[in-house]
Image (cartoon, rainbow, N blue to C red; front, side, top):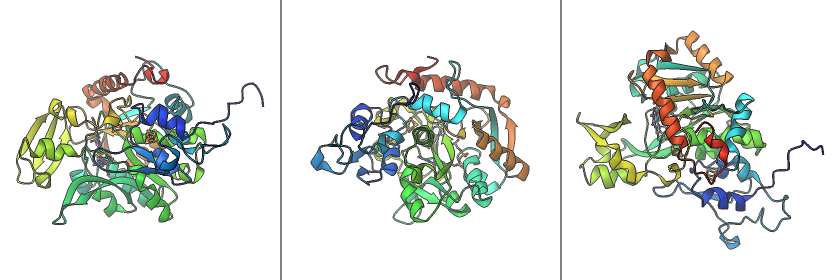
Length: 385
Ligand SMILES: Cc1cc2nc3c(=O)[nH]c(=O)nc-3n(C[C@H](O)[C@H](O)[C@H](O)COP(=O)(O)OP(=O)(O)OC[C@H]3O[C@@H](n4cnc5c(N)ncnc54)[C@H](O)[C@@H]3O)c2cc1C
Ligand code: SF4
Ligand code: SF4
């Protein structure tokens, strides 16, 4: 070993539990869950939960039999290798994707282009949250054999069979399945959890759609050499800009009880400075975001990443040009896909400079989120503050 060789990665569930899960840094992204080769990390995709736990209770909450009792350095380390909030996750992800860490003025992450994009296909555009880019991209990548499946978010059905609002991770392998998940739910969906289903289906090249916290999983896994059967399968990383997600109980406790809005009657939601709610009967309501704060998921309170900064392509809906997806292209792969989709006529684009206010707002919101990162945690996520 030379002096410059990296120290062996020895960190196990105990360190993850102490430094991330119980410290408040854990986002509930489920990266540790899907990578565990012993299947001993549980996860409840339920209101008030969204946190991993160890299922072998006999060793205590903080220990893992596959790490516990082994000489230091010899236990299983997969969970910490997959965690995008453990130790120096941010410079590691930046380094892996871009060959360098970010500069002080790159508070919204490293990127090459910003565009406004909409799906050319009218139906995909109509049911998309903003410009329908995410769905159009998944469909195009599936139909052009870039990926053979996608980890997205669907919804549970209402008792009458109509689509409800409880978000559920799902696997999409064709246009119909992709479109089933179009639009945004502002509650949490750990789309990574659909990984096992994708593996069972024999899928090898996956697109992962997820809020910022989920898009850092793959680059961190790649950088730390986490389980190859998991990390190698994730080929495309599509990010959703995100300042917070809400606990599912907000539907009943705030929208239902205070405003009389039944979730089964809600047609669409969006967040544009206020919580916008369109009802199936055509009514429209706005709810002050301050009223929603009490239902912010705990996992979001320390999240420093607004702009899905480790995705290939990050997408959002801020700005004055509504119904177009604000699109931040970050990697060579992201660039190549957008270019090919334009040439194929699958999307229409406008320069991001058509909406300078949106770009300025993205930088402001990114700085705001970065301030949430606690000063007792790894200092690198505070670059530029
Ligand atoms: C919780 C949350 C918070 C967000 N906050 C912001 C914000 O503050 N500012 C901003 O500009 N943009 C935000 N977005 C992103 C925005 O709402 C759109 O998702 C984005 O602009 C892409 O729009 P589109 O029309 O291209 O996507 P579409 O074509 O409509 O596709 C949306 C994709 O997102 C997936 N998805 C939907 N809901 C969830 C969920 N809860 N969890 C995981 N995946 C999901 C769907 O499965 C689908 O693949 C947020 C999204 C979510 C889910
Ligand atoms: S942040 Fe994600 S990977 Fe890390 S402990 Fe929480 S759920 Fe697991
Ligand atoms: S704010 Fe958004 S990106 Fe951050 S942890 Fe919450 S859901 Fe994930």
